[in-house]
Image (cartoon, rainbow, N blue to C red; front, side):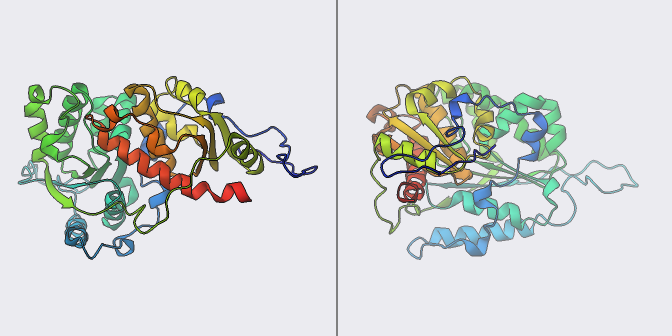
Length: 367
């Protein structure tokens, strides 16, 4: 619930007095029913209106225009009856033929080349009602299995025309086996797949765990997809000015009081709170928040904390929630060891997205 702010009695150098002050994310402990997890498997607000014709390919990167062509054809091919025959009255019992070749496309490329834009455009372009299409991040998909159970997830998604998985990453052996089994079952039922990642499907898990021990599962996942490489520079910073430097604690606090619906937290406290909230609830954590204001931002202390912050950054970016901060710049959140390790692509994505949100937040200081 947004907080109404009273601006009466405002004097220069002092923030206006709010009825209840800014909200604190650290005070929120959301509960998310399984039905909400299913209902929210649609493109996030940032990508509500994107389409293939709103994607601007970089003329210097032919793979971007090629991706639009390939995905447009892929969407058109998903029209008509479900591949398994689901939803049609069948007078003769006949097991549908097993799909031949990959039943999915896999968008591989660096952060900021527009992969999520293209994935959401594919979802919008697929000729099927929204109830027959699902869109979610890899984390959200595994959370759905955790909430519903494996069999119920297969039953829920098995009649879909398309499943889009954004930010496909394998961080542990359990996820590898789980997702390999789930996608195999869905493909058997005729569900088409589309995914984005910064890692080729055959290289998933590399640098994170003993991927060689799970080679069969990884190869099985890879067999479901046709890789589609998308080259290019991060569009979020292409031709744009440098991200604003962090503000002072006083500026951030003043802006939080002046912005209706803003939250205000100290960064170390927020990191501790994220450890107590399951990542599947990070989206609900930001419900009705219009801006996130953080004081005392500093380097993240360990990898577990860093990975939780990555998920929060993704949810804030999806919802277009600006982030105003004091402390160190966002490009100094993660240590050199983290940026050179197996999760480096996740960390660079988080830096890119938080930088874009910091740029969006700059006007809050001058309002």
